[in-house]
Amino acid sequence: MTEAVNPAPTSDFVRDEIRADNEAGTYGGRVQTRFPPEPNGYLHIGHAKAICVDFGIAKDFGGVCNLRLDDTNPDTEDVEYVDSIREDIAWLGYEPQSVLFASDYFEQLYTWAELLIGQGLAYVDEQDGETISAQRGGYGKPGVESPFRDRPVEESLTELRKMRAGEYPDGSRVLRAKIDMQHENMQLRDPVMYRIRRSNHHRTGDTWCIYPTYDWAHGQSDAIEGVTHSLCTLEFGSNRALYDWYLAHLPLEQAPPKQREFARLELTHTVTSKRRLRQLIENGVVDGWDDPRMPTISALRRRGYPPAAIREFCAYIGLTRTNSRHDIELLESFVRKHLNLTSQRRMAVLRPLKVVIDNWPTDASGAPVVEYFDVVNNPENPDDGIRSVPFSGELWIEQDDFAEVPPPKFFRLSPGREVRLRGAYLVTCTDVVKNDAGEVVEVHVTMDPESRGGTAPDGRKVKSTMHWVSAAHAVNAQVALYERLFSAPAPGERTGDVMDDLDPHSRELLTNAKVEPALADTAPGEVVQFERLGYFAHDPRTPMLFHRTVGLRDEWANIQKRQNKG
Picture 1: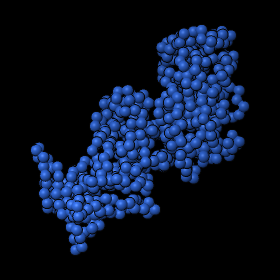
Picture 2: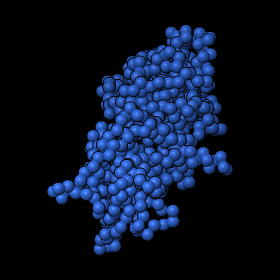
Picture 3: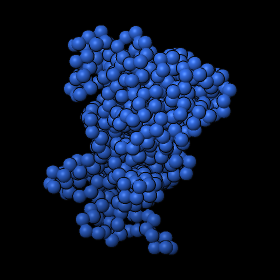
Picture 4: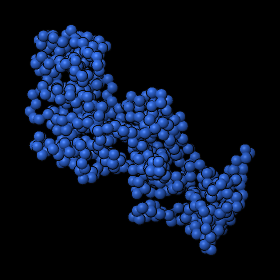
């Protein structure tokens, strides 16, 4: 794990409020946050922003941040998701002070539930969920009080204890807070606190058959742990009043935590709904949670996104009170900038076309001579040194680098044209070989033996430099090329269904790529630059499978230019 390094504390509405609390001594100068995901799926890029905010703010103020798994819904949660969440946080460069679970507090939450009943602030309702939902009314529509709302305290206590003891079937009863069925905030219209659900819990097994709702568990878990600032995204803004109401009616030993909301991270061409992501997997659109087309952190890791680039991107967009959709090209620009500084350069040919150098020398036995060229590993970092790349009389080049009938402004290889082979020689096309379908399958060239290193002794200029791989030394590889999983910038905006905007051609798998020998030593997960082609990550599980991380062209810079012109 590479430890996250945050810049000096910036000024935003959350940090400003924390500074004000510290100056007022609200929490004795303490700052404690938490990252509280539900373990019902893999984390995505939106969670990455929340992680950076929760851990980053705690670090900025010399505080602590815990990971707390909000495991109150056993039907959808699994230890697999718990493990993946911990791995993702570590990969992003953060380490929780403690790893905690809402299920750690089930007994305390139950005790407090009985306390609220005793104060006349909660009651057991025997109506079904559909009836309760209908009675809550809506915005501008009055709520209807439950016939069980004024149930005697002792009766509700007895009923809750029977619920816990498993004496009633699932869905037959709930515990509700008694607040205000006419409140303009729908969250305060007698919300459900407990429901009966016989499901095996990944930590508590079958100990419990009643489980707290998110709102009943969340703020109380914060208070138990000593959280000072409970940071969440804007969709939880309407929950804040209920968060505060519960805490105001419990016997806390210290100042209650404050919930504050900030804008969530949304990207163009991307969806982050766990329901939608799971649908993509179940429908076979993608191969799993870590398919490199997915927006999950595990998928971004597999695709080669550096964690530092994600952190820098999240810091750049900052904290706001208004939701907005950021261009995915902006995130990619941070990825590209980081990889340009750190990635080793290598040569790879994705769609190979054979080139034969007719005047290439042979040795005494008639075998083609093999030469080696020293090539810089990374021009951005001299300490990365050089490597020797083999070169001989038969090479692979990209099919796109040859045109028998070149279009206008095509400066690469074509009959009679001279080009430079990267770091090697100048060659001129003299002939082509075609198959029965009339397709060019082999190109013949002659080289200028005086141009070793790619420079002509008479100073003549050529307009194109092409990469290559020695055919005799090439290593076979598979390369996966990716387009946007969703073709529309705002998936679903046109029809209401994001699946209508799926790109059926979002992945192209090339199975006959030819790469230079050094790529055989690429570590699993390592990202390299295929010269002229882009940045590619070696798959962590499948040897010699490379995923395109991002291309070389800075699309974000082009977007900015167009916007400035407009």
